[in-house]
Length: 120
Image (tube, rainbow, N blue to C red):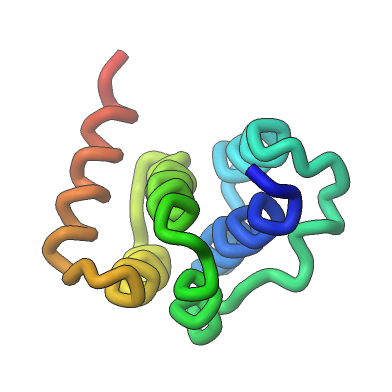
């Protein structure tokens, strides 16, 4: 993935992680793994973090295949600490709706992510 696209996805994910003002150790570890996965070496590259209000516009700017990768990564980040709070769910719904998905479709992805995380 091109470096600027990778940074855009990482900014979206960082926005989701901080949306609930509770930065759990599991989320911190997820951010580190995500930065390595997307080959974003400098943590400062994920700033400015994308707020929920900006998320829809930012995700629409991404090519469709990157949108899907972003949504997968967003769900993984949301379930990293074993729970998805309302602020995180709202962020995911905003992004999903910008991609043409409804809240029920996002809910199913969240449920699948939580179930996958719960398996040993």
